[in-house]
Length: 460
Image 1 (cartoon, rainbow, N blue to C red):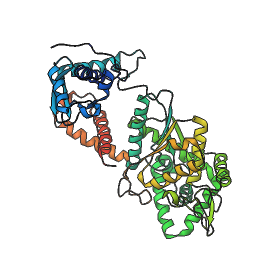
Image 2 (image 1 turned 45 degrees about the vertical axis):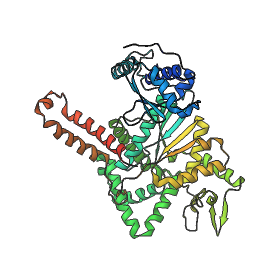
Image 3 (image 1 turned 90 degrees about the horizontal axis):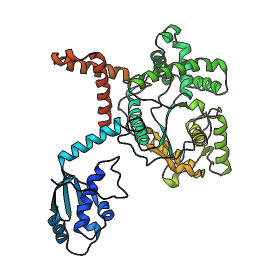
Image 4 (image 1 turned 30 degrees about the vertical axis):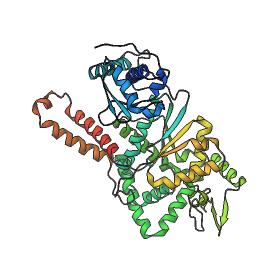
């Protein structure tokens, strides 16, 4: 079987993608049979469907003559070689099958070379430089401190880690950011509940579990007694005002939570460059955001409430403030404490000033679709050019879970069950099981991999 030398095509890069060589080989055969340059022919070679390796749609070339005659010219000149084994004509298309033996050999050779024989001494297979010189911030996972890492966080973590690896493989400088939910009135609730249900002994034994139990109990109290929420709001206001007595326990809870999360991420083979949090968004940036909004006339009054009217873009009016300490869209509670959108806007401005990113991606559940859409639109109305580079990657929630009600399924439990299932499965083949050096670790790693694959396969 003949092996022909391949011409150079400007858009092809066979050094990183061997399929470009096969596309070039097909383009060469087409350009030799029809009045096309190699570049023109290459642009028409697409990946095939339904068992076909590559397909050429003849109408895209807009050549004179009937399609059947054009196809016949290509087929009459076709000779199989080390790259392409056959061509068939189907209406307006030419379908090409590659030389399977050559394909397997060349793919494996490239995988080996770009994994083990690179100048950088680092694996480079599957990478390119399309994003060279660009920076992207990817915010994902983002659990709440003092709460255990549950399966609801898993989707954001898996998707965000995948996107981070993907952008990095394309040459982007990636800032993996974990924006912890470490601020807000829920911590006033935990502080209130800790006074009633807290135990220093239980805290030292298992801080995450104990604080979660406290949170569930105090939420039940709050449902029965509105004064509990009022007291919680007062606690959080003290935290924002810098009251050390109110902040002392919060700092301990945050530190213990981050340590626990790092253990969980390590088990998932996930890492972060930055552990940020709502508490770290400077008041200065929130105030600057508010000043700019006021100066631009974006905040208006409506029956005693302050709103940012986004109905023109079918995004409703952003969350309003009413009497009694309810939320406001771009401002603060009546008691002076800040809320989510204030911090999100201030945080985005602060991030751009620090990182000068080219793109920022928020991996957040679909439950927050409206919030993110309003958030992006407000930044756009504030005339920040980089607002158009923000992107929301959403996903569906795990149904039936509620932290407040205590009905969440924790990741530790899922990993344990997956490992047990895998361990029992492995034991069914006694000969192979005996050959495994560390069956418990192996079962756990395979179980974790299975959890990742199963969750990614789910419709989101």
